[in-house]
Image (cartoon, rainbow, N blue to C red; front, side):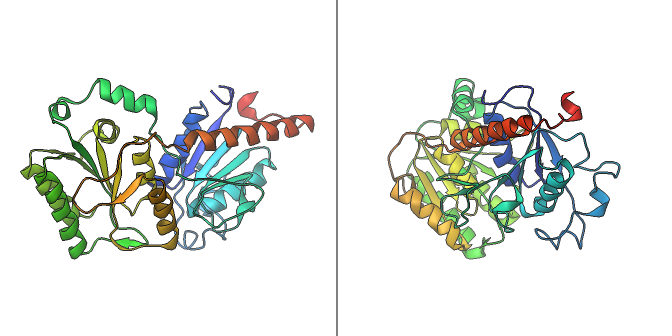
Length: 336
């Protein structure tokens, strides 16, 4: 536990899975149990992010506001839509709530007390911290527990096994018909070579991609999550000898790196220079390899930046607390 259990905390996002996972990953590493506060700005306020004000419907004084007092000691936020809300919290608390923003806020690092970005990002500032990988909720303890009690449907699959993490369309990536055909054919090659496939889609996976991947896996006696019940994502990673991931999600690639298994990456149409720099860093480290339909790479020591980020947050937060208390600032109502 990096922070006292009495420390109150919020995770503030618009509910996107990637943003929420990043925030929860570091808060849990801090040893805290945060409250999720989900924002939902309407147009035109959503269009004006990150520079505009919050949606007036979600002002602190309005019933059901996601940023209504009492305010916590710590707020960890992510996603461009959250920027105005972090700015408002800082104004409402006069800086007493310590704020952390995960990823580039696109409004400068001064919008929060601390900003985290991956090393491939060009944002700099005295309050900016960088790590090679994106923080996440995949811990070694969770992986070990999953290996101890695997689902029966997965336990019988012989090695070598590949976890297939299927992303989807994003701002910078698009799975064309050609991409779907290419990715599916490469999975077919891998399965024909005797590798058992265990796959899961994401919320962004388009139906055509999902159905094509599911069909390949089904033909070869593998496992594909049917989106019923809890996603066995952690278990797939825990049991994998290699991981196949689509590059549209840098977070997903970072989660795969926590296994210490080779990560075979398929890059769909589109892309972004930040994404390319990120993947190239992992290629140079021997973690990431191009997915061609064949196994590649060797195991390595699991890589995880979550604890590093959490430690930096804890140090900065405790320094902030000392300054606040030294100034005899009143404590928050939630702590009285």
